[in-house]
Image 1 (cartoon, helix red, strand yellow):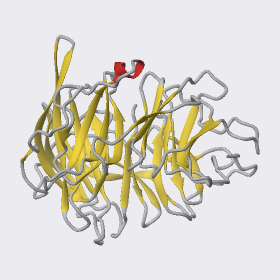
Image 2 (cartoon, rainbow, N blue to C red):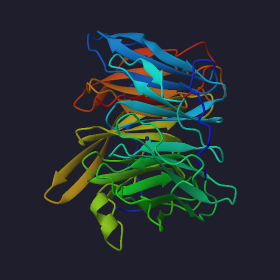
Image 3 (tube, rainbow, N blue to C red):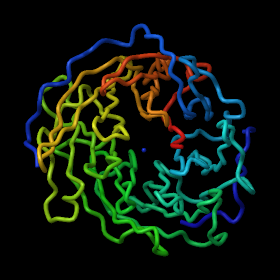
Image 4 (cartoon, helix red, strand yellow):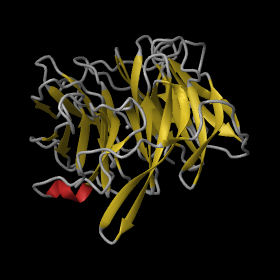
Length: 400
């Protein structure tokens, strides 16, 4: 793909186991009332696809508030967001291009110089900024029906595009049968890119930020656990001990979603190893998002339960005995209809979840914010994120 010679102005006008399953996590309640808190959060942003908006928020002593200067409205529907690890800038992928903004100390957004980055060809289904803040990696299905990754060179200082206008982007394309790009994740050590591809499984692509093309030419494909399964989500442990894949596992259970947990170090061997307890039932039909806590001790899964039914957030503990790691089920807590995104705010006080609403007119609610205690979640804030239906599809927290 080539980068557009004219940059698109971003303006307000417009993330070795057995083959069976453990019991699903016990349900700890639905999406009922909230438990008041005096905790405060860092800044985070919600992508509203239906209303074509990005909305910035923070929680102050338990009360949700919109960020002044933190809302942007687009001409085209947004679908994904990527915030630089430095916390200084972000990108929003829309059906009309990729917009770039710098993030002020209060969370206010400023359109980048000359507007931001615009891809004039295929558009990203998922994006992520690498740990060096030097590359924006965009994933999509190209015109040849291949999985393509584009590496867009960016300034680590301000996030602007630093390649030549009109030049071909560093990229790699892979022929993966039945692939649909669902999610992308880059390991904290900057060595691997993971892409969940639906029934096409998950690919792992080597990455080196110091190369002129940071993307490796070969991809390791991880097939779904069961025939007919689908990889919906992917994440990497911040301490790079594990990587996670959320799949529909196609079994006789009423909740066939599953979480697979792999040893990250096994990527360097011939055989990938799942940890003890993996795969484990995710607690719902579709594990749409995975969030490992920054501490690395717990991982959360956002489960959809159908287009009109409230979903849930399940949590799991990770423990070690010597060099052996184990995942164990915790409980679930109610969420909105079709929860699609998870984030941990930078104060580590809240887990944030957004829900699209499925085929209904509201996420009911669009946003849930949960406090954390030894991994367990308690609903503290729930809210709409605009005039419903907003179609909240993603949430991202400023990391610093």
